[in-house]
Length: 362
Image (cartoon, rainbow, N blue to C red; front, side):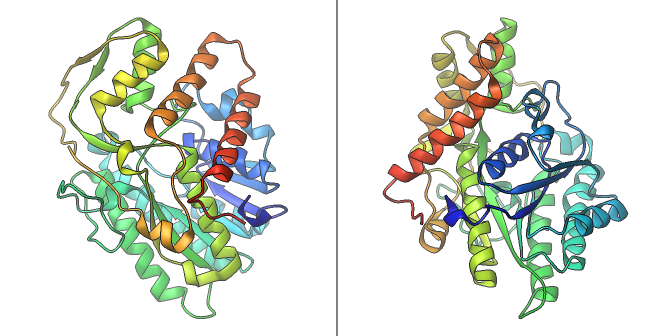
């Protein structure tokens, strides 16, 4: 996978205790990488990081804040990584309404801290900077946003990520030109689902909580349209992008969208109903709890990732939802070694890539 580029490589992974970070940490170790994670403690109970004991599976796990510049710089300098995957963030739209300062400090200043710490460490060759599909100025148009369209954001989370994209582009042009510095790209993904996510105000984790408590599933905005994808889809894009940056450098130092095909762009109500069908129980009802703004329509254009990187999505939304629900069913049934089961899901996804004729792999 990925031209065996990660075998023996030293990877500095921020946000490794989070949902996506936990999956990426495991996949990187499967690829033979030495992973040093840097993150706050998990902010949910349970957490995938804790339940799968991921700390014991990676080379090093550091409990640290990306706003702690001194500790961050010292950690990177000591580990001397080949590449950084930066996932640490305040990732929730609704939390940004109550914590706008924290959201901006973490997402904008925190990212700048990591970029600067990486520039001090001369061993670093590549940097994959993870943002979001919500970085675009969303006019709720009926087509996917392209990478060259304006950044923006109605809420503080979305606008903070738009700022990260603008700042990253400026940083690249200011400090990472020619022979100077590492190759840095940004990656924008859609609504990600998968086992091991217990964050509040996310659709499938909320559905799972309602089902396991015997309550009806309450959804706020049933007609909202989102690009739904299994967590391994964007992670495969990040890893492929990291491969290209390590192999060919600044040729790929740019922004890339990683989203599903059009048939996997579904309404919230459709996804919730598919969760019920896969779980075999549950009932969906609409319950608008507040008046906080949430976009009704958001899609990504992924032609650039397909043409430039050779990346293409592998799972349909139906498969992504089925794999996600299966993970939670096994977890709550307590009938499975969840670490082994998660590894099997990664291996299954790797096999699906091999059979995907549109996916270019070496």
